[in-house]
Length: 605
Image (cartoon, helix red, strand yellow):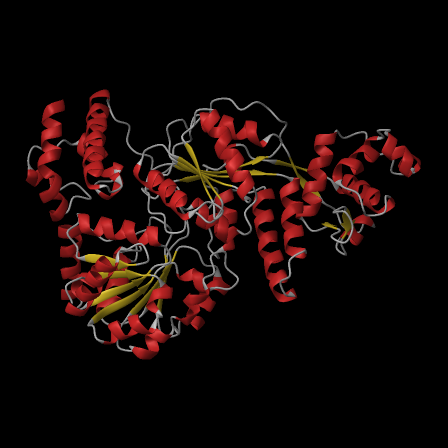
């Protein structure tokens, strides 16, 4: 081991309280310490921040961290200050005096890390400050924001190549948890990282359990799911502000501590709700995708989607906010025909250019393929990012209850023929009535009871036909007629199927059933069960942590993670020396909280 890495390992233990590096951390840190550039793809919770925080402590000068959100900056600065690290941020939430103090600290070289938004960094005034300062490195967090095709695009990120142009001798590190191959290439091109070493970790989050349910009564399904997770912290995503408000109100009436979050709320309300989510236990945030990027809360136990996301990258990024502490978590999604039709209409009806529409259709097709897949969810998800997972994971819904498929060639031909013969301008409900031979005033008025397709599908029930239409739309055989009334029409790919030139197998949806209390499937990283006595210690330590956090107005997790408190409860230390051996207890936290921990243990024991 080089002297530089030996020094980094010593800092890792003394400052952060960890005995060894994880994954590629040592290589990345060594690259920066040597003055080289790096592009890092590492899953949420994989330890990306340490990759630039440790070099910032060891290199001369101040590390400039480009961060897209105020909340993310404040959380990371609070966590670093708890460790005794000299860190600050510059953003619009600071008073003039506080901002001036941070700028003076940068010029004097008395801080190790300064977090700043890209908009402020690119101002002439801040560039002048940098020109007069000693710089250790540039860290560009959430680097996927540079991609114009991405779900979190920030145009200012595309101007950050100027950092290399003005300070070519200062090493740079770009980091993200979400980037497929085209997005990686765009990051390299836009940030001028052609000479940077790339470090691509596994995209797998082994502690997350992926589940997708067919949507038939969304409110009832959501309430049933949440009753299985009473007292747990979670995030629920919905596409519209109205749906967010309605869902949060419903949950509040049902006794859940739910808060809404979307861009339509005033800034003060958004900030208040986000602060409660970060600092209180068991809060459920109901939000649009305006919430979540950079949220560093480690104990989010579930992320639920009430509507289909726009892409697999978005889904991966959003579900990655669960289980950052490595303990069991769930990603749960409701999915139905209306989601498929709605997303395709959004794309086709947008004012985007045809090139962008093609990319968005491709991304949606990949997401729909993931939803309808018969194989392990983890295998499908990782394959999208170019990673091969060795066999089935055994912990997703498809692994626990392997879906069946059936020869749907004839049924698909009936459905497509019905769409054609009714004039390619009707929705699914009407088409199913025709296939089942249901007479109604509308069917008779249109003369659809005289079509050859009237009643030919009576061998299947309405639920099965809805499944057929959903999968035909998801597979691209049917599309939405935007110029009409949103009815279904045949795509070009439907012709070979309709003519009998190709077979088709579809997923056999399970019958609807009431959701009983389900035992959570243990993950590969499930925490060790605590005895009654150990659980009592654990709860006492959590109460101590909550009290200390309240006194300092910081989130509880910046003091100690649950995993650290659990280890203390499993092996109660008798002295400060013993406590220093616990993972996550560095010298700064030992000095600040060591005595409180020992006193808490003595009171319980």
